[in-house]
Length: 267
Length: 214
Image 1 (cartoon, rainbow over the protein chains, first blue to last red):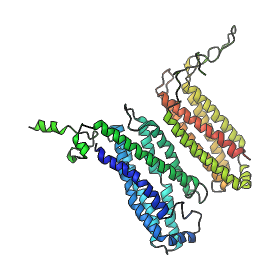
Image 2 (cartoon, rainbow over the protein chains, first blue to last red):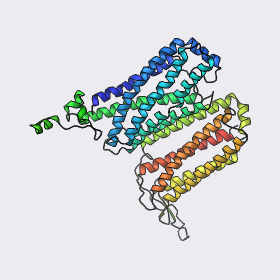
Image 3 (tube, chains in turn brown, purple):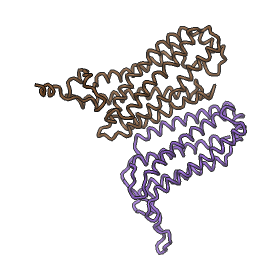
Image 4 (cartoon, each protein chain N blue to C red):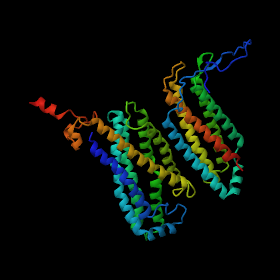
């Protein structure tokens, strides 16, 4: 249903990823991850004082970019719904997790921007805000992993003649999900590879997040295009991107009867 | 190498032993194909890459503080580690035999093999609990020093993988009936077996790296 708008949604995902890392890394100046977890609170405060404007701008941009996570996840959910054939449990889990996921992006960004908002605050307070930001961003990836696993699980269970997603993509969801899962280690260590600036808990996690995100958007676009070519000619309304709200229901895949038949039956 | 015959045990002609013809292996498809399915190996590659990164990190940090690492390593018990190694290798053999359709006197042993592998995995877990318990009672935790950080994280992540593998094996055990036809697809069965082999492989690298490398 509505493949045109779905395509826009999925492509927004590809548009989102580069500005996301650019705003975080270049504008806010926080990649490589700074301030590091092992720093003293005076040095943490110094970072926020020196990078005040960068953090304010970078995080403000990031807050807006974070909502761009919703459209691609919506398109993903609709494609998973094609696997289940209805609003089944997997589809619903994705809906639940996608909404919550955006919040888990927004709050760490809010903490960071609050740190820069009054950078002359006591260093204790700045450190707490910095910790909340980093631990929240790197350590709270559980929803993302669940999304990945649900998509992987659904893909591997897809028994249709031409599956929505290729099987290797399903397996890669699990493989990349494990990588993102390493983020949980940030709570335990202040330095080394498993801290929030570490080789594993930052670089591996961020890389596998980025790879999966781009891969997922590409796979969703591919699936939408195949869906569109299957439905071509069935419903002219579809190609125009028109949705009749009254005819939408929670059952079925939104495939509507040919409107000319409806009109004919009413005369 | 393709087994044409049903029996893997052949006694010399003229001698009949009680075990003659006891053990046999079914050969199903004879076409060349990837074990499990091609996509599975994407997952295995990704997981092994993650572990390789952890190994590389360990070797790097070990190079930075060789004395600390060597001294801390002495707190580890290589005997327990070796027993774990033996348990996992055995379990891999059992899983492989089970998936290959091994029969004992014509009876399908798939379930028994998987059960045996589960027992080995349970043994591994018990030993792991003993090891961790011993160390924490000595005050050695992941926060003690860099060596123990790596030790706990590496063995912990591996153990989590093992427990996931055991979950898969439990699922197989419950679904496989003691009959020639299993109720699990070939692909899934082989895939689960390959995952288990991967867990075994990781320990084969992990054990010498952490316990033995000086």
